Length: 474
Image (tube, rainbow, N blue to C red; front, side, top):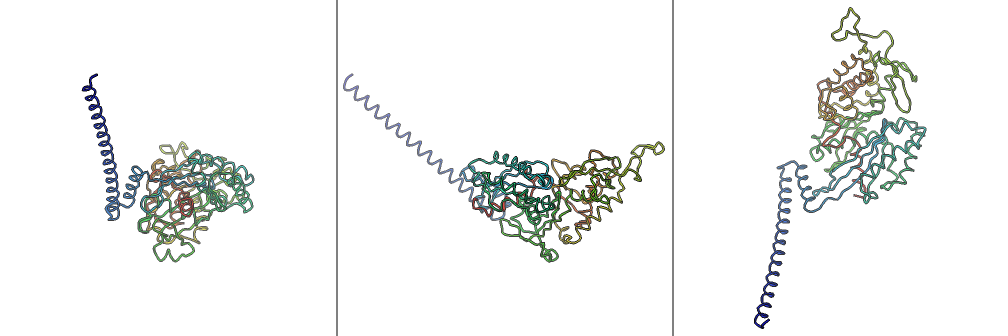
């Protein structure tokens, strides 16, 4: 190769290297500019959303959700926060494992998802076998461990709160059950302390339920006057809770408490009626004139019903309708002269028995006259029984009038139904509880839902929020 050709080759190689460096440098510059533009767009979007939010152009919760989503997608800002709540109810136990994140604006908790699992019977059924009760809770804890990533277990608060079922037990039996669960909690990887297990006060149950409904409806950043009332019908007790605004409500000082909210405490009226839960009331009605018998005859059960088992508080009751002297009515489309008659419940007598029971318990603490002025959400057994009676769609829920419960009571008491032997009694009870117990007129609208935005309506959410707000793990 000549010297001239060699020089040309070296010059060519040099030019190619220089050209490559320029292309690489240009690529880095373009990438840097793109990154800067993305950051500028994100910052501008966040600033715009912030300004729109605080000039009330869109609802606060919509604006916050937009900002949170942007922060999560582009900035990776989403620290998960978990809590596990065991609801030890009178008819069964539930575990709810919640996942929240902190809002980009304000730092308050936003609910992302939850696990809901359930088993029966309730802890009170194991009053004489506390270890078996603890074993049922352990099954639920295993499900929570599968839901929450192991790296968060040690920072995740775990609480168990027992409701009316354990409140109604003798103190010694209730304490034995709780001690068995305390031993279980000592082995759990979740975060626990001396206050993790307790029999929950009915007041807290009402406040936490009210919080849950209003939290899921995005009402807690609004004026307290915009919040809704919460009616929770459990197995052993029922709660009435609403924001207290009128003098008649605020005068009942023993029932006025503060509920937490992102904007500070809100005064609420709440009262828990122990014994007015659906199952406690059912037990009282079937025991009317039957004392402590376990084979009972009940005015509120259709005469065709024979020895239907009702399990409550560890006892089995075998319930039948009247054997004689019961009313009848013509079968639809039937022939009276051919004896095509069907037995029915004596609605007047059944209503009288239930009304007396409601009055005996509710009269001493009737809700103030502010309740009918509120938008009212009802759940738990209100929802379950309304769906069983065909008043609402089981999957979607809906709204009804108090009068719809009365009409359903009349209808179900006229229809022999061995598959739902207690439906007449239950519907009559709910109607009388709402109208005569709580003072709601027949034309009062009741909103019945099991879930809001895909989340269970349960006091457990309020309890989880409360424990996280005061927990060092957040």
